Length: 313
Length: 303
Image 1 (spheres, chains in turn cyan, orange):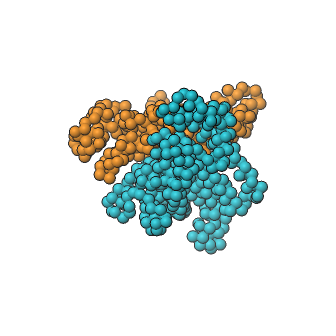
Image 2 (image 1 turned 30 degrees about the vertical axis):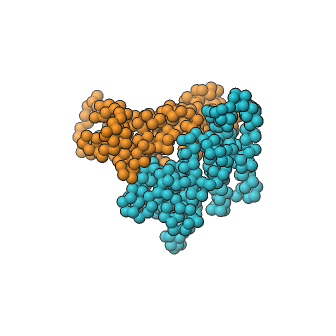
Image 3 (image 1 turned 90 degrees about the vertical axis):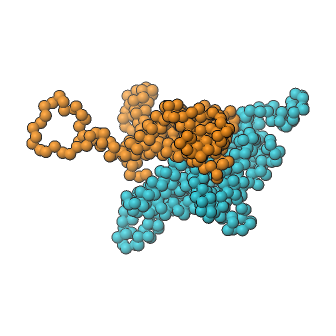
């Protein structure tokens, strides 16, 4: 088991290296000369050249990659061209809302979609099954920001139940924090829920056809216990996998959702950085999101043993 | 399509059989297809309508979608301006109709190029063993960057143009096709008839052409449809956050991005392109679902 954990952790290193190489190349081939930017408008070509050498920008690609990687390992992602603040600081300032949004969405999506998928599989072919599947097809087809505008229009503008936009830090009270988070979380969660509900239904259909489910039923185990204990536990591995893979949806969707609901998180930071072509910030955010994604899926892999003791490594 | 349905004209050459039994009630082949694959038909018809709109955009009562008319800013939808006008006085109806072209172009182009390049990479990875490890690690790395972010990063490097949007989204989708094709190749290589072909000394290109490609066609068609749908969504999302097609081109994402500032008071500017985009993506997704069920009946039961 420990050997497996170590092996699995080690195996993410090449993937992370490739991601890092890719993100580094992004800045490497980005238009514009960082030395010229730093030197300012008044600089002579000699000044620019001097800055270029002092920054090590004249060195070969792989050596620069090595140096950059060393900085990344030491949590130094460079400075923003625009604000001149360290990128790590800018990320740290913006991480709370994004983290809150993603965690809220994850909890909401799993707690709604898994039971829906289970019921859809149990009552296969019924109206509830069809409703769940129809909902799934629709929410795959409607862009996140459209869902956001629709929800905000009805629940905030028309009904005035929830705030239209904005974000309240959790430090200013839990209820205002939650109020501001409900619409964005439902928005961001719609496609994610569809994904989880679909895979839950599909896996449950397979599991419910197994002999041990029939045995459990015939020995008089209650319907709910059969569904949520015997069957769901055995369907857990594919579901957890999709929850992990779907985090990509969550990250991509957060960028857009934050724009719709004016949440000052990493998504806004990304969008602002794109509009200003602030490459170090774009690079830092993408690197951070990608590493988070790889780590989430690593965690998912390690969780397998919890759900399925038969998996021994 | 069906064992019972006889195509019209098939019995023309033979003499009609005597009426011993009453003829069973038959549906025409077309009806049988509709009943068996409702999603393909609904999706296909909607896509056909969208293609029609895209091709005949100039003849559908549209005006120049980029014509400014500051005097007629933000008019509500009316008989004159079916979908209203935006804050620069441009006709939203015309812009939405012309936007169909961008969406279809991006969707189809991305599906085509991603399939083609992914197919090539998947074949190389599946057949040339020593490349497999390297190629698949690179694909894993690419897939570890959430799709929209990768597309955003690529768009940040280049000037916004439809070509670059297609390129950026294609790069995102290539690994998905490559993995699919590689999987098919690896499982087919173990099949007795492929092993026999290899043992008989059949050259690799011929094996690929005769045995591998026909088997990748069905899953790739389904995959291409889903890639097309997601590419349309990604294009709209990129344009919406300002990293997509240049603002001068009326794409649905751009129209919604421009309507964003006013959405609380003039929701129709965002609403109409949103409806078109959703119908378009829904149509392509339905087509994909239907094709998957039709081409792989085993999958139909599962998902």
